[in-house]
Length: 375
Image (cartoon, rainbow, N blue to C red; front, side, top):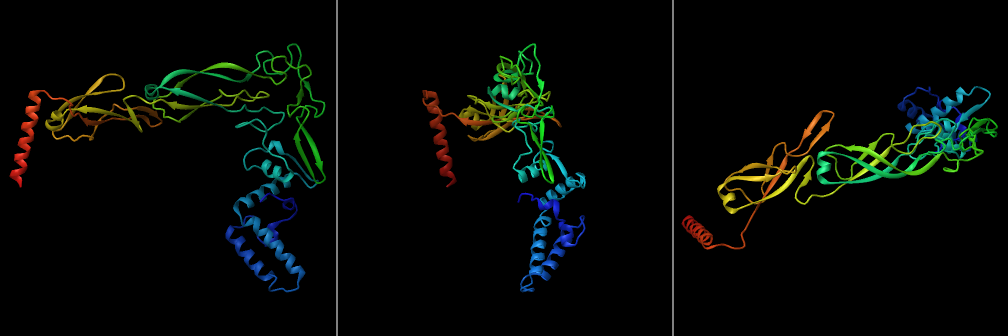
């Protein structure tokens, strides 16, 4: 429900007979009593009671809803500050999601938000924050694990290198807007209300450019390639977004720059995988190692190897943990260290020499004799 003009004119608290600090329970109780007394079924043909019933229902529709009640209170509080002679609002000075600028904007067909783009502030003569810029960066698996210093090469909006953001040709300066007198806003009197909106002549900047810069054509902004150096922290994941504060589009009228949002795409590795902060790898072992146990060499991501002892009777597909050889990631609580998870895979030879064949046949015969004896 959008706020209505009658919010300024009607006191719903008086309609329900409760104080402005009344609890939700007190409001509901007062409504039920009044609605019961004034219901048309109890007052057939009584036009006055029917009208009061409508007023009570309208009051409860607002005060009985937490969000609507807050909007109602905000609107009336702002109206009270306007004084008895009327209200004077600048919609664009009250921007923000759910703020009074949005409320009044929905009432009068205006928005309390400016055109500065995502993260930008409302239009007006004051400083405006630059828009956020999104970019993508592909990194190798090992670089994502260990971290890397790299550069992004972008073509984005930047402050004009010729006029340094003023929009005016070198040797000239912007002039105060004659339409709004440099305020950046125009008052629009609507009887009881006095609304303000951005000046259409200067677009809310408060100044006009008489001799536009040849490079940026008066905007103060030009597109140009630039290099952004950054450090990708260790342990980043595929799809993760890193925010580089202040590296986005330039602000207007002295406002701060937006942010650069870098979405990471991590390439796969031919041998290693990842599970949270753990690295994973599969290592082949022989039947003899699996049956008798022993030690095997396990590769690590940095190119070295570690020794892993496996027990006799190790089964193919079993998983083994090498502590501290995973991903080290810095957090507010300190460094978080993952492990290397090793999955063993049994090698079955495709060819056997005479000695190997004899050994396997002897093992098979012994296994058959043992199984016969057990039965």
